Image 1 (cartoon, rainbow, N blue to C red):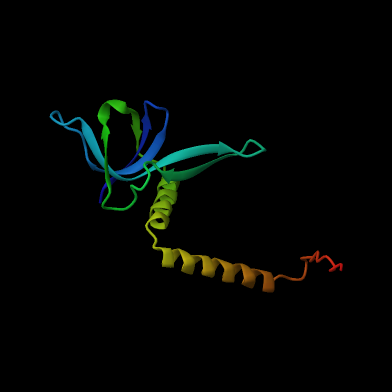
Image 2 (image 1 turned 120 degrees about the vertical axis):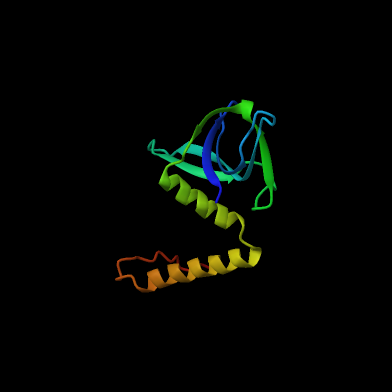
Length: 132
């Protein structure tokens, strides 16, 4: 199992990733994989929420390694359990095949239909009449 770490970089970006190999005295780079940038945003009410996006384009998957110069890391932290859970979900989603994505989407659509069918009638449909 690899260490999951959260880094603040000199560029201001925050990332979360698995550290495969730490820097040494001879080699100042950290080898990582499954790196995601943590984006922070606020909705119209000022409520903060986070999202993940791949740190580097087309560098997703367990066999894609990214080296980072240790001198560009300002701080390092063990991420919160909740952040790690969402990170693991993002990793899983990023590694899904196109067919798996389609199947998951079908499951969600079916679930939404079931929820609509199970409603107690308090949903009002606003269908417009057809005008010719």
